[in-house]
Length: 167
Image 1: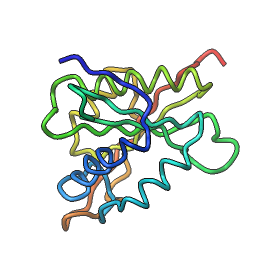
Image 2: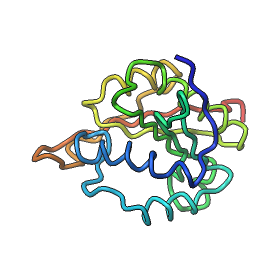
Image 3: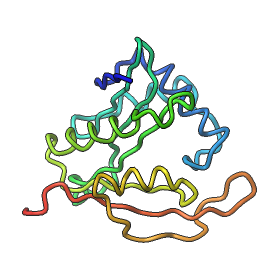
């Protein structure tokens, strides 16, 4: 499967939102409880800056996944730390789409001058945690019972990849 990763455009947002809203409704990989509206996703996209890109994975002309680097914290001292998000259309799991998107995010993070990329992943999502580990993310800790979705308390594992350990 040959996947093209490119910067997202506003024209991609319907597909981005559809993929994300699938996980809002059916998964604990996001702790959001209500689906994104078109206006919310557009506002999210327009707030992005050069250090916080959104990319899409395209296969046969269709968006099959997306990824983003987001601000980890609004305080200035955290400016070189970003949180990674990767979402793959459920029909395209286990085809290398997530791996391709995460690899691209890491390259873009380095190019943007980021120092650290972090991930916050529900511990139920062992495939996501394994993917992060394959790229060198180290698990830093687990926060127990910090999310509540589908009538259950959920734990979140925090992972970290130092991009430029020499500085």
